[in-house]
Image (cartoon, rainbow, N blue to C red; front, top):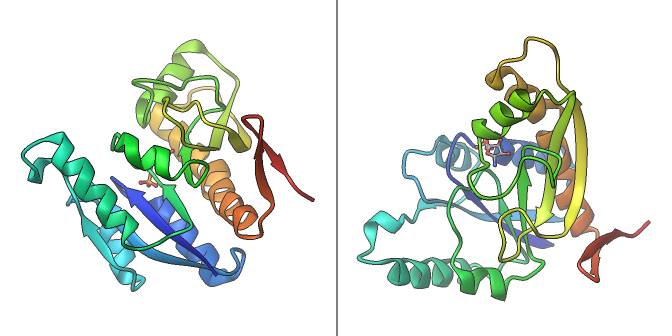
Length: 208
Ligand code: GRF
């Protein structure tokens, strides 16, 4: 059984896609041990509780400094002994020690085809605003491992989504979620659960 923990900050539709895929049996041999949010108002926490998953908020705001938060956050995560950490709409800058300790065991979903529209400042709706400003005809989503950079880790899966004339950032965001994010995030977890994902020379190799 692969144990995963999910980090969230917002609505939690990607978390929901993972929960649904586990229930539907499209993700095998996987259990969600915890959902942690840095934002106590995140609806993702409600989704977790409804699914019977341990859910809590650990916010930097509740600590006197970042070091104290980082230490407590890492300790909390370590206590669950998970195999994989999934960032599902997590806007928190992770403690560097966490990234180091869980190398190639943290995955993130980004709402563009990396390396387009990624890096510092590219998150949420801004990604889609920039894509529309540039007039791209195709965008999409990427699941990748997390390293020390911003959206620079090895790419696991990508899926393209067509931009349509007259799209607003909100409409495009919704299409990217429906057609790409909610599909490739569960798929990536399933591939990892089946032991089919290897990182070789900084690149992901998917085994048959
Ligand atoms: C998604 O667009 C994801 O790509 C981005 O943040 C959004 C999270 O949405 N990183 P949700 O909280 O999963 O609904």
